[in-house]
Length: 331
Image (tube, rainbow, N blue to C red; front, side, top):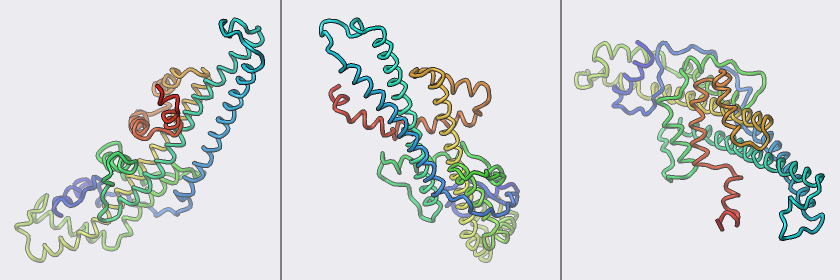
């Protein structure tokens, strides 16, 4: 019997009580339980601090360019009836153009880094929600439109697709560097490995196999003997715990892949800004080229749809600040 069949069988046998779409069974990977050398919280905090430092440097450079532009405009009086450009000396015009380009590039860089900061923050929160969702009785936040509600819906709604198999997760080889992505993937592999450590899991799977041979798939509960009903009821907490661990593994590994794509997107945007400073159109072209050449896999490209959706629902701070500014409100 395949792992997927066991999962479906369990769902039917236990009155379709399970909401997990993960699968487990006798052919699940037999992983060695890895150590917890790379903690999610610590790795997430380090990632946030590093990106915040980059954002601060970008802001400082842009502020310096803005100050220089202000000094240039205040350096002498300008005739109001004549275009400023026509009044500038060649040196002033050259300096003006350079500063204008720096400011344009700086604004794009600030937007890029702000998006990355947002990604780190919400992916960290999504990992916390994944842990909460692995507990019995979890219910997604009911406050529609809130960040937690949005993140929970994405996390739970993606369980039917865009997920790695348990074998892929179990085979994850930790990096020597403990980064946020690695901590998530390592914790996912640990969760898969812990299934074999659940007390009674092998006996539960063996008994479930026996019940299916007698009562079909799903179990025909109306024909079950009293002893077999008791056996079925005894299986429920053990298999529910295994399903919860496998669902948690899938959730964390999914978030680790989103984190990887987020860093890739930032890398491509930085490359685009380097190749064509201030050209917003170049941002998407570099990513498209990376997809074409295979630097970005089809799966990674598919996962950008999740991050783009989050960008709409949970905009970065710089966008919120611009929308709240008096100039934006007047327009």
